[in-house]
Amino acid sequence: MKSRFDYTALEGRAKVLQDEVTTLTAKAETTPTDRDRIMGLMGEIHALEETAAQMKDAELVELREMVARQGAPIGEPSAEVQVERDFRAYLRTGEIRNASMSTTDANGGYLVPEPLHAQMIEKVRLSDPIFGNATLFHLTGDTTLMLPYKSAHGVVANATETGARSEQNAPTLTSPTLVCYDYYSDQRASQQYLDSVVGAEDMLMGWMFEDIQEQAGADAVNGSGTTKIKGLFAETSAYTTKLSTSAGAILNTNFLTLYFALPVKFRKNAKWIMSGATLATAAAFADPAASTSPLCKQDVAGNWTIYGKGVLESDSAPAIGAANYPIAFADIAAAYAVGIHRSTTILRDPYTATPKVRFYSLARLGGCAWNYQAALLLKSNNS
Image 1 (cartoon, rainbow, N blue to C red):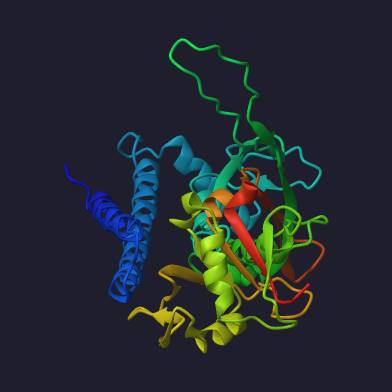
Image 2: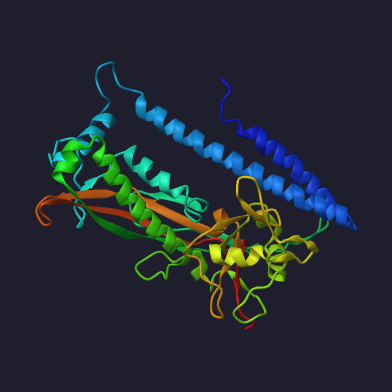
């Protein structure tokens, strides 16, 4: 049966357009018409790739829901469904049933079962500019994970068919460490609310983990790395940085410089990341390669692009300033890794905040620079 999420056709169309871009850029001399065509093709490619990615995500969500629904005898809930029901009952009434899994962690609480965990985390994660685009690792044991990648190619030599071969060095490996930190929240509700509102436990879980994921997402942009995620914009010693050449300001020429400074293999999937205020500044610029055209373009859906690459807005991105790095251009999936630990817990406490019931929720999330060559940071300064 053909899937209604037919993203392969979109990917095929994007490949055809990418081949046309490659042909045009390989010409010895490109005309203004060629350059306009290239920019138009890049915008269309980006739109196709974005739509295909959204369709893939939708298909994954649907498959998870199908798996969660099947496998139980008629009239009898599956073990997974029973655990979920028991967990909801625990949140609503405080009743601890045998099916609930108590943790031995010092933080206490009860593990949030699947598929509730995935539903809570995924819904917010996918809308996050960094967590939604970075490579995601699910951790189930330790809260740290080494992520080796090839940071420099091995030596490649030449020889005739029967010539001698010298021993070559192995590639250089870099191994950043992904660390998941505890992100916790303390939310409260009255027992009357829990008793009278249908779906109250779902609302509570949504609020708790929305707040936690939003804070982790903000840290994945600009966190310091001290007891929290070190954000992409804070990894100035890992990624290559460029100067705007103007103290406390950015210039329209900076974008073209960043675009072509990113290695070609990462450029295809690259995105711009900046705050709304920085985007407003950029939106006022003219394209230095075509002074009659704006640098930033907006489609009918309200999405912004610069040189055909999508712009992701983040309120947590640094502002334009002499000591700041307000713009990143990156293949986020290659440049940055995020982790979500499965031991998400909620502890129900009806005693210490009476007449409210207190819900202490805990999630472990992490993020770090991964492939250092896949991102560029612009410093709004001349030194």
